[in-house]
Image (cartoon, rainbow, N blue to C red):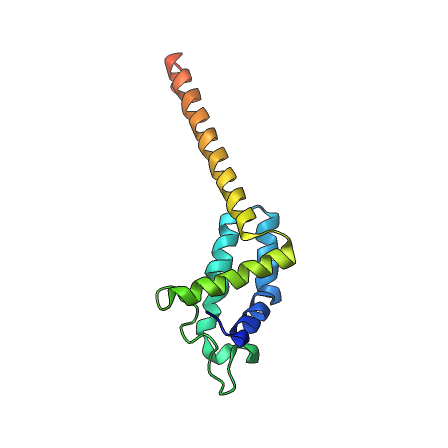
Length: 133
């Protein structure tokens, strides 16, 4: 469970222009799996560069608020809590919840699978007619 200070720091972290602008770009481009990767992984990489952390991501002694750098291998529960904050920011700032994103990804994957099956059927029909393509 995150402390209030960690939570407040993460709200600011995910609202940084570089994080939010990239999330917006990915959402507008409908690159939803990349958006998920961005929120759950790429936006968190800089947390390991302790010297470069902004003050809001450090405690009173100057130590990182997230000693495990929000890395799931080191502390899975912390990472889950951190990611949840990221999705809260996405919903508040961009208007799409994590559930909305997951449903849209599922729909995209189902459409891709259906298109693949149609292409297989079309190739099979062409081969049956003697067209090798």
